[in-house]
Image 1 (cartoon, rainbow, N blue to C red):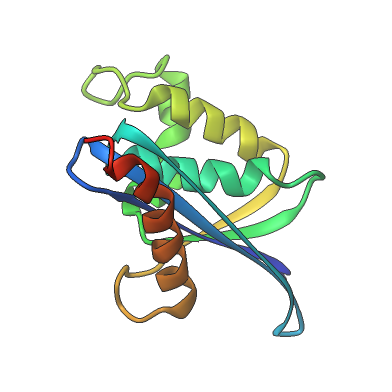
Image 2 (image 1 turned 90 degrees about the vertical axis):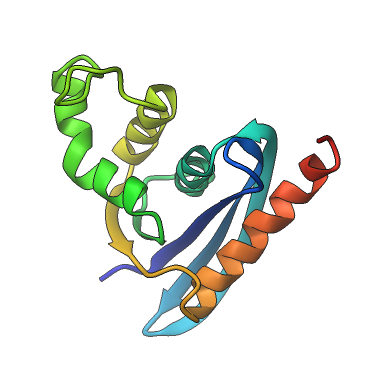
Length: 152
């Protein structure tokens, strides 16, 4: 059973454009929340997929010791990438099945490294569907994007 959960989301105003990522980290014991931590950040020229990846990366990199964690994301790109595509990309020297370079390979490598230190389960949830923790992660992503929106 997982006691640590990371709800992650990315946001972008334009694609590419200014973007942000957000993470709601929740530690629970027997369904009781014992601690929450919020993280967010952003960039001035990025894509939504890059922000989704950075949210998951940030959730894992902030942990100071190996942990058992469930990452809940509304990004099928992140969930499918890490659970279905990543191993083949590595075997194929970071090429897709169509022999094209993997997009965002540097972030995928970083995510692969970050997850290697932990026992990670991945779950997809539908975004903007009233899931409270996912909605909070979305708010954090938008907060992370705010400082960069004025730069355009």
